[in-house]
Image (tube, rainbow, N blue to C red; front, side):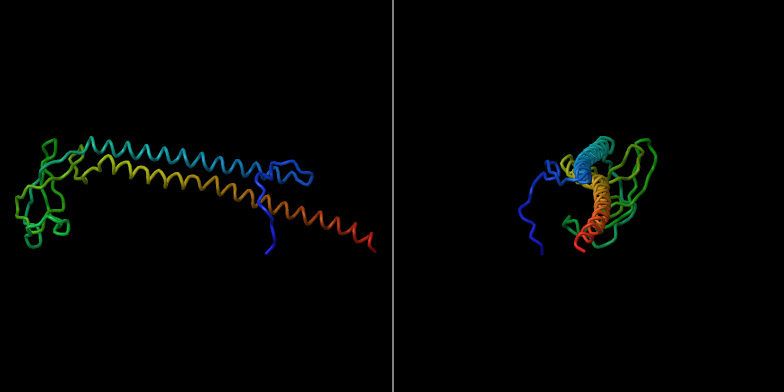
Length: 192
């Protein structure tokens, strides 16, 4: 393993007689890539968080609880407790806001008799939906989606910067080989 010495920060920006034009270009590419990565990631995350929060807030306003009735006995044995494990899917009928009749599947206590009242949630058209999330659940969900969207969006400028740095490195190595061949030709003539 080669000894590299101590890390020198901002070396690409310092004045140096050995600094090549490619070093300056690489410095600007790195700066631009990191700036775009942070900016794009933050903006995409912020936009996604806001969109999810607005969507979930709209659901809390538009979705309404209704009371439906079991159309038949729920499968399973009746249980006295109301733990989540004692719930099964069963057919429920309800009347929509416009007066139309609807049916659908919801989770109810196992063994519930036909006609049992069941609270269910519907959207503005009377379609069956899940219970809307609370504001704190909505915030958590929005933040998680925003983080995921920001990270995904930030990957594009990061990958582009990495690709450009690789291209610059290959070009620099090619130039180094050319310069070394020229130097070796001059050096070889002097020694011989």
